[in-house]
Length: 174
Image (cartoon, rainbow, N blue to C red):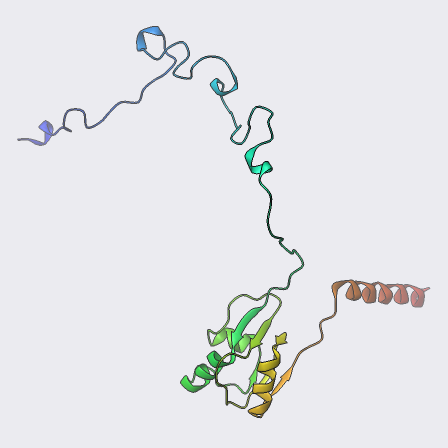
């Protein structure tokens, strides 16, 4: 056998069928699309269409509600924080979202961290977080720590304050 004798097995490679190339090809005239109608044309997108009847996805009752104003908190339990303190991953005494992220305890949470009270906790730590459950607050204070929740100013109030500053600056300039 020589390199110039190498070939695929018979039928291993099948040629592309060229449709719509005359009656002699066997796939001429309608080119395998049947006859007439929207589906025989190019660029059809009528997946959920049922001939004018109300489509199934609209007939079925909808469930639930997606609150677009819901806060996105990263949640972490006290037990996980205690485990990180014991293993040396968490060494700071003032705990914020940055420290929890660095220790690998939280991810995401664009509106901050919320501490929950599941697990045993005995470390004396000071937390500055967006939220804390009642049981978590009790456990932290019992261990000798403290919880601070920074006050969040709504965007509307920020805008109003900024607008007031610009008006005052304009009046002072006159």
